[in-house]
Image (cartoon, rainbow, N blue to C red):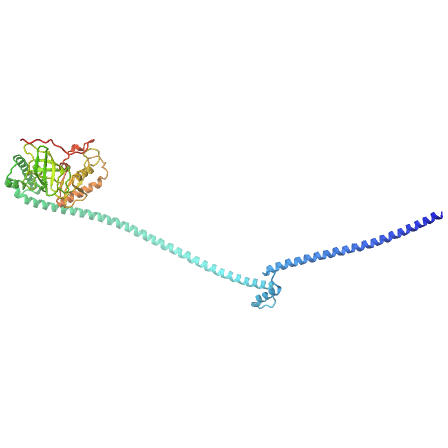
Length: 477
């Protein structure tokens, strides 16, 4: 029992010690935990304070950076340099307090004063602009008034000028009409005087039987008497020429007398050569000329009796056509036309209006001719024929022109006219007028075709132009 009691006591003592130790351990744990909690609280507080300090520092740095940006310095600029710069900036201001806020205030005051001065200037400027605008409006109004007055004056002047121009035009028209009438009257008077003079000059050519009462007649009646006399003399000359042509009068004096009554327009200008040999077997002749320059095969030559320097066209006894140029002064030609009663003989003269010895004659062709009835002018074909025969066609008439070929006006086609006829009609009128003034001979299409040896039938449709060939009547042997 004692053992159990001892054991129990020991266990109780051990339990008490264990409790005490547990209590002491709990107290110590509490004290340690309390101290640890306090330390953690202090640590947290210190951390919070450090965080707050760090935040304050960050804020201060941020504010410092913002402040530096506001005052216009970078982060690397020391404060001493900033103070020096501020001192320099305040050197022009009398204030003792130096700060950027004060500097800004001073600048604001200066800007305010500048703005007030600028506003005052703008007000003065606006007032000046308003005054200038009013002056401009007044000037524009004055200018418009002056322009209206000027325009009215211009219109009045234009109206007066138009009236004056119309009156002057009418005056010039009337003056021109009067001058035309005066010129016409003067021309008629001049023509009448010339006619009277010519009538007086022609009195000696009138037969005595028709001179009775001639001076008492009027100009028209006198001119009719002269015309009748000339017609009768012309008929007599024509009849005499026919008789002489048949008789072949050889008396030089009689030929000269007859030639004096013939017109120059009915004569050959000059003899171009002489027949020196006739070959009846081949129907050809050999012609001697001063020169054969300009002669071409195909040229038609008229044959005239010998002995007269300028024979009449009506005296020709035949025609020959040049076939070959045999030398500088010899031509070979074929007989195109002759008669048995008056054959072509050695010694006969030859001449043509399309060629002169050593000279290519110049010919002017004007007007309209439609031989082939195609509605178009044949002028180009005629020009080609003249050139082929050795002649030269010119556009203008001069004293050197051999003759002018007047083809006449175009056929009547109502109001229609061939193309370019107006210009050609003017050229025709000028050429004919110039030829009459210069004394150049004017012939028709018939004379030109005769000179070329071409018949009108050669221009018929579907036919080529060819030389006119006449059956040669062999001479009586």
